[in-house]
Image (cartoon, rainbow, N blue to C red; front, top):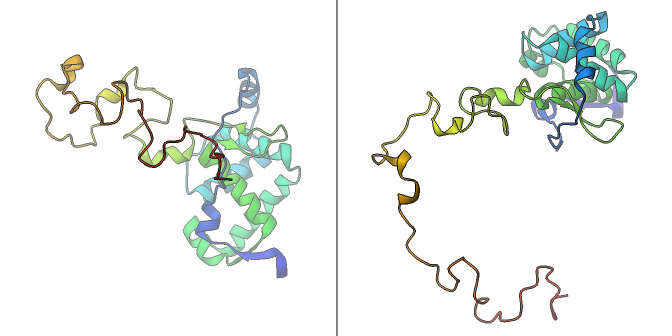
Length: 228
């Protein structure tokens, strides 16, 4: 704990801030994951998992993912284990029993500790550890990323059809289906047609001309004469 310029009030907005990290999964060989999975949890792994469960308000985070996340963060911050110990100390000092209580009582946490907290939470929610040395996010998990929990049972993670091909044709049981026309699933080419061709276009939708007063050729760069 420090004071002065290195302190800023920690709040839910800052805590949940995952930045504008793009969810890009880095390609990793299966052997690398197998190596981590076969490695026994160390004391540092156990503490990281314990702190992660508290910060993410979860009791069942997977140990193998904790090991993977910790090693990725350590790859870009060799002082990370010390920061996790500091987070653990801050939590215990606060006397908070859960993350909500912690956010309400930990009024001042130094920037370094806040950044470490955000790195942990970001890893679990996005399933990747951003800012790796190669410029790509480090892959932790896809299907177990916590950001997918709110829609679990309603929709699957993007690009992942674990319910089988065309699973989306059958609405989830939690969704109330409005009345549909009889035989709608078999309509196919017999489905109702549109109301005809859009005025000012060809049959394929190509625009015939620009609106009145804008008869110059279209220029996607916007650098036509007089528009510089």
